[in-house]
Length: 133
Image 1: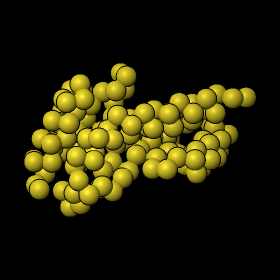
Image 2 (image 1 turned 90 degrees about the vertical axis):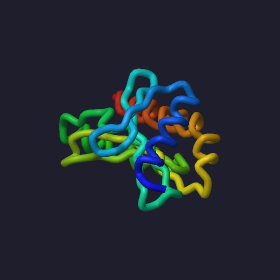
Image 3 (image 1 turned 180 degrees about the vertical axis):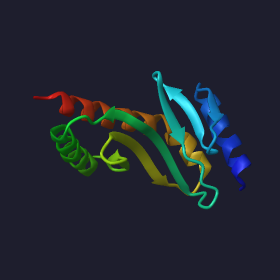
């Protein structure tokens, strides 16, 4: 399937789930969930790979905060089955993603709400841990 067909498919899934999506300048799909920006990464080179990204949701200010963020990311990554929390740039901020391999696009449709829930849960737990003294 070519990139345009994949983009249209993802946009249709978003519409079916009640979200408005748009193709961004990189060709990925941007949408809002609870007021925050998320992206479905479009990979025409591997149609079985699915990734939703919540980029740069937490800025890292101090060296202590950077070290704590790495520890919290590592801890939460070991608890979540398909989610990743990771520092980006030169430890400037933290992003989250869900990455899956699925045989059928219909499986992505089936699990889309669950995927967003897992992503939100990871981010919420990260924020709680980072705010602890």
